[in-house]
Image (cartoon, rainbow, N blue to C red):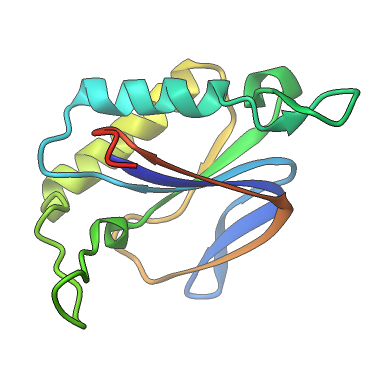
Length: 149
């Protein structure tokens, strides 16, 4: 799995002009499922994200997690995180999971977040979405379950 995590003061996702998910303070998480990912991968990624210490404490240091702040997550599926454009101008998406597997992995990720008592809002899998957010900091973190980066 790959994730782009952004600390936000507000975020929402729209499908065909309709808001499908919206949060105030918390994290906007773009998430992609890889071909080799399992339900354990989704649970591990969820655990890592909610415990990332990327929120400010009283001294202004990034020392608090999403759980410490009672923030929410806007989770949006984005298979293009597996785009590989190293050898050409048109990215290859061969490392991304096929749609059925991708949807199952995304849904498992959302379930794992909710099992950690996090409020989660979502986009719509395989839909054309518009994401609006205010990046707080800005703080943006990249995660890869295979630790590629």
